[in-house]
Image (cartoon, rainbow, N blue to C red; front, top):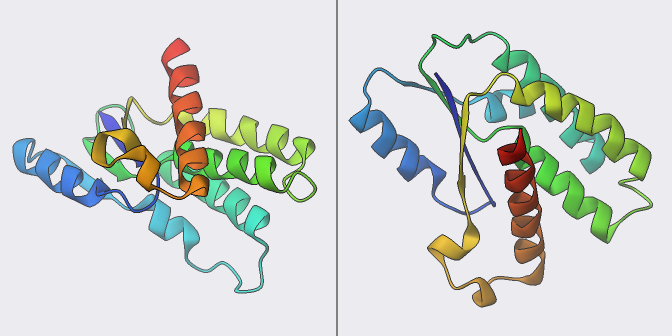
Amino acid sequence: MRVAISSTAGLDRKGLIDCFIMNWGNYTLDNSWKKAREDLPDDISQPEMLKQVLIKMNDLFKKHGRNDNIIYNRCGHDVMAYMMWGYTVSPDIYTEEYIEECIDIYKESLKCIDIVFYIPLSQVSNNTDQPEDVRRVDNSFKFLKREYEKK
């Protein structure tokens, strides 16, 4: 089974992943998020970087099948949440066309994951103590989670 851990930046996904692997030792960590960010040019724009990461993650996820016991640190939810946040703060950069194009890639990436565990910001801290931007990104995650559960 292909499992992904998804959350706003700064939350302890690694601790949850380590605990998961300790209890289900037949699972292997796959850091496709980190691999997808490697080899990108330094001068790439933030929107283009996110899109390229989403594409690369998708390609890396396709290497695993349903019978593989893989746990991913991040997935398409993470990338899409930041894209949606970008659209709310900079719609001239993260255009509607850009978001629509990336949604197709995002949907494709979800076909490669069997379960997504989402760590909501409110479960690990007092939400009001977080900067406004972090709360907005977390709201994007919550929206994506609700949409994912509908499928």
